[in-house]
Image (cartoon, rainbow over the protein chains, first blue to last red):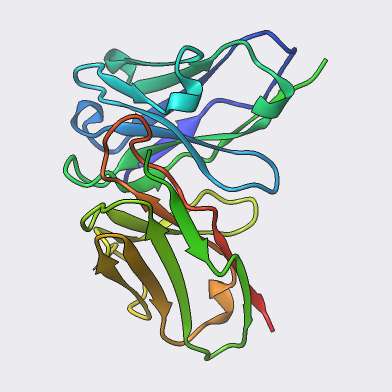
Length: 120
Length: 110
């Protein structure tokens, strides 16, 4: 079965960077795009960007342009999301999610989420 | 930019009620509209994709309709496990916003 397992919670200081990993199993990693979505406590879902694990191509939400980098290591079926210049407003749960098909952008498989806390 | 709105922002309903949630896009997105359910502390769950296609394993009491700018999620007979927050998402997939979510609709018990 498809599984996405994310790295553990992180605590970072303002101005630092965080890198969250998302290890995929149960399917061919390079065959489906990965999206990253975040959610601050009590707030809605915020789409951050997508990555094609085969080509490495990415697309980032305008809000995160210049601060976010999405990469992958195909040898270990793992996607990464790195967010830099962290501020308190970046405190949130970060999710990776796999699309259901390459035609449909809907995310049908989700990781368990990674809490990133930004605090001095 | 494609902006997504949802109405209502919250609603109270009883078990067995028919519930309708509306999602509107700021420009036409054809049928590139998805619906998710999220319960507290859990990852979102895909319910409907491409406006009206039921994701595998999702109960048939959930249905979606619409195209262009106006979309609807309907729960035909609300069950206790359906109390949650529902989000629409456009997947028209053009920059700069690619896959924007709506603000969500919280469904709670009357």
